[in-house]
Amino acid sequence: MTDLTERQKTLLLLIIRDHIETAQPVGSKRLVEHYHLKLSPATIRNEMAALTEMGYLRQPHTSAGRIPTEAGYRYFVSQMMDQAVLPETVQRTISHQFHQSGADMNQWMTLAASILAHQSQGVSVVTAPHIQQVKFKHVELISTQGRQVLMVLVLVGGEVSQQILTLNEPVPQERLSQTAARLNTLLAGLTLDALTALPTPSDALDRDILTLIVQDMRRSAERVSGEIYTDGLSNVLTEPEFIEKEEARRALKLFGEPATLKELLDRTIAGGNVGGLQVLIGGEGVWEELRQCSMVVARYGVPGLATGALGVLGPMRMSYARTIPTVRFVAGLLSDLISDTITSE
Image 1 (spheres, rainbow, N blue to C red):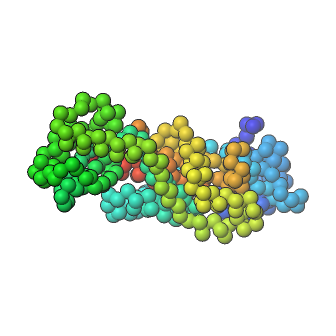
Image 2: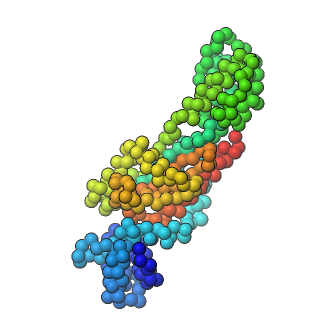
Image 3: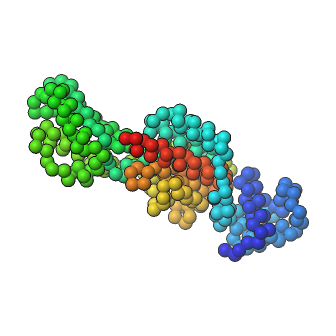
């Protein structure tokens, strides 16, 4: 793309901001009157024609004003990506909401989806964090009746599993507690690989319980994470793009296909750093379903331990200035909460 003059940059950004607000083509008269520009309509028309030739604007009808192209939106995002900041009052409100929710991971995910949808007025999506490296934290063995024992396994990150074991013979609670204490000391903080490399315990009960712990942790490691939380579908149903264009409505069908939606998020943030943010405009030639839409997506969590993704989908003329800092802030907040949870284990 050709370098823009300062006047062309100003006009392009004003046109995009105005179109985002009104969903209407923007003409030279509107720019002069609404923004009190000290330029003649003829001069503005010439600059708009030049911006159209460069590929930043297009004219939907012969007599209409201009609207941004995908390239125009990309330029707009590149100019304000690092400048867009969430007001401190909004940051404090969001932080307060999360801290009120306690230490419940499901509540965090639901709240994140709700906040993203409300702040952006788009459709939000949040994937639960995937535990990338399963680590042992704690095991409890509780005698129930006869030969049956309840095993409660807790992993670093908060995942908990329970199962009823049937032993060869009844074992008193005192011995079960001693076994659990030995294993908790031996296995604390170990990964699945480290557990499988341990020497076989000489005590038969220790050996049996360790085998079951390894099996449980292996199942956790192989489990496809991934509960997906969404919110805000009603926000976009009244937008002109989703009323008038079947292509745009097709994007919303993604939210009824969790596997496809998760693949979209995973591929969009693949290789990106935690806290890194991606803006997908018009599907970027890859996602046909998103040709009339944009998505702002970020990765959150703790690298190497547990990460997830979150984002917002909306029309291509979404409010990037509001959506980008909201996605960035919520991703950072979730990362901090998960880090605190893991490091305090």
